[in-house]
Image (cartoon, rainbow, N blue to C red):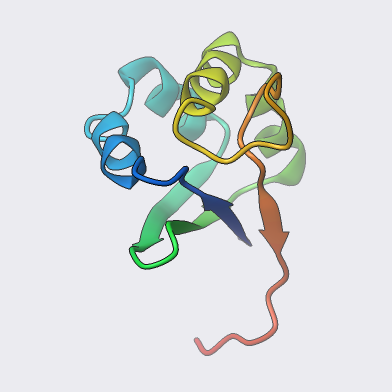
Amino acid sequence: MIRKAFLIHAKPGMAVEYEKRHNPIWAELEKVLKAGGISNYSIFLHEETNALFGYMEVEDEEKFQQIGEADVARRWWKYMTEVLICESEDSEKGKEDILREVFRLD
């Protein structure tokens, strides 16, 4: 199992809307994520900074990368640019920093 983590940031005043958009997540998107081998997926909010820490486990890197080819994933990313800090105004998805695992205790 591959463990992945990322950090994104909600725009000021948009953390509540970010959470609202995930509850519930689009059923079609949930199916694509699960078909892409994602499990144990959680996102946590640091309320003081609007930082969002995401963690997931992935079965296979190639299968995971195919999620980004799905129309529903691209539509979701674009939809979420309204509430996330992005690289630029015309970004297709929020600015995402991939985190490297430095410690693990099983």
